[in-house]
Length: 349
Ligand SMILES: Nc1nc2c(ncn2[C@@H]2O[C@H](COP(=O)(O)OP(=O)(O)OP(=O)(O)O)[C@@H](O)[C@H]2O)c(=O)[nH]1
Ligand SMILES: [Mg+2]
Image (cartoon, rainbow, N blue to C red; front, side, top):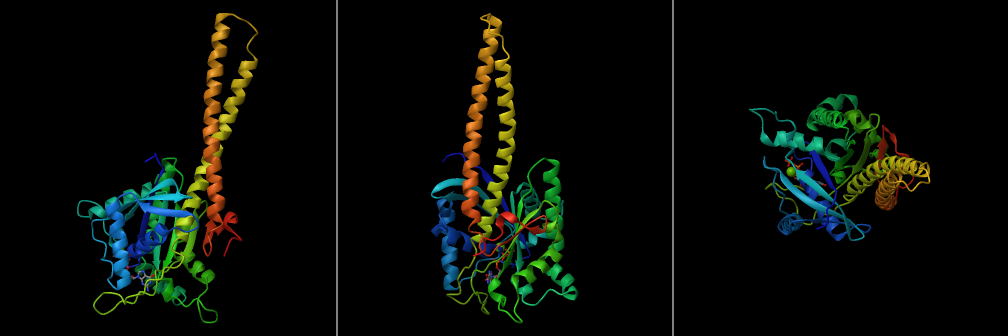
């Protein structure tokens, strides 16, 4: 397979908030494809395993709770059947988030923290169950504990600090309101997305601070009703909007890549300008030293022009991907530094 850029994706959220189920629904939806975009697992066995568990969920068998051994996936993201990125996606158990690190701590906690600091994308799952009623100031602290938002905040802060120190771009943050089927989104006494977003802002202010790019998206895998034996009622699977967080993640990824390419193209253009000036300033002489100097400068100029061509092609591909993906952000709310992102505004379906 051609060398693809790798995107590390981490998913964090309280135990039972729906991480594994969401991942299965996303995969099942994206293997069929949405808007010319697809996902597929690099390993055939893993592909079969996810789709079998997904099929079993539809028949009523719950997914097992994630164990202390995290499950890693390698998904290829393709657009118009052209593979464009490799997603290194690890499914951790929610408990790994609030366990301790250190000699007495759990191994998956250490792995989780390292993985997050390498991530270009962080998915946070907040259980929709908690947003059925407004998160009033009296309910906020108990709910923050249930959703582990203090711990999520400190993990995000640590990631941003570590990446700043290493001169790396910040990850996108996608806040999934899972189990959105449990929420009454109707008018009147029902909840509104704007109201829920305001509550999320109070619970996770770190995701709305300057320079952070965050999307909030309600998702549902279907009204999975848990039965007394721990399984779920069959035929409850009916995913909705599960692809949107991935569309946002990829849009943010291409925006970051395009920005870096744009900066690099600026530097290369300046270098080309200076090489051209130096060539023009060479005396019209056939002396060996001048001839050698001209040959050297011409060689450097050709190399810079080749690099400009390569960067420009990559920049054009990123901008094409951005306009195709950003048009599909549907019901997502995207924020940059806490304010609605202009590039994602007015595209709501
Ligand atoms: N109604 C409803 N229930 C859901 C949905 N997604 C997940 N669930 C239920 O939520 C429970 C927990 O789901 P998991 O996906 O195992 O949660 P998790 O975050 O991976 O849990 P840990 O691995 O223990 O951290 C299961 O009983 C699911 O059936 C949804 O969209 N709607
Ligand atoms: Mg899980």
